[in-house]
Image (cartoon, rainbow, N blue to C red):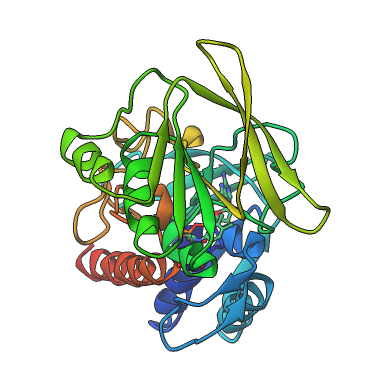
Length: 307
Ligand code: FAD
């Protein structure tokens, strides 16, 4: 039986495991893929104090740091269910896809999230070669260039406003007949000189030259005409999906299926904490996930010494 069992091996899970292990308590990490989203990232230039690194390098550094402590790392294991303690102070169970079940006094959920993709030709091929998901991360790479933002919800319109201050020109493409972002954001967007907005527009293909993105095509859903836009970058902002499906019916989730946490990382179930992109934390970033992982681990420790 563990004192702290962390589910997820991204930045949040790694930080939680390190903070827990440093308290000298029995700590385990179960992760489907240690490193998480960081593994899929090329350049990382906003992890404070690290001017530049690459995803796989940072993922390896996270894992090496965790392994310098006495942590039971169970990689390539998927958690499928959480069973709350039967009685106060009892063990919480985490069931795995391989049929095994792990028991722990406290659990930290750090299963992260994934970006919803458009599913059009060229998107996967040009991932990180012009197709991006994070304006805070990759916006500066397109300084002075032309980009598109796909999606006219709050994230898409915020991204377009943010990018308009950095890049040369932004084309915003929304499938629906109108933008769905808050009115105040729409007003701000429309006031910007270097932004073009297309509504009722369905992106049909990401175009490239074999090495990087050169444009996209979209269909005007009213006239059925196909249009081509020449550009260097495409930011897909059609939703971030928390990896919380396996928790449905246990910890309280928000209407966006994010695990609800308080400022200490506590969930609706005593002894169960959560951190990172899978939670209601505002802004999904590595440095934020790391901090949240530390918070959750310290809260779990606090819970243990009071039990
Ligand atoms: P994740 O990194 O998503 O890790 C989740 C972990 O949980 C993984 O180990 C996963 O395998 C595991 N897991 C999921 N479900 C289960 C389950 N059922 N059972 C067991 N394990 C499970 N942020 C920045 O700050 N700077 C950047 O430059 C940057 N660039 C990015 C580029 C891309 C392409 C992407 C996709 C994201 C980028 N981000 C960047 C965002 C950043 O990667 C995330 O904010 C961060 O990784 C979140 O950490 P996390 O630990 O919460 O979740």
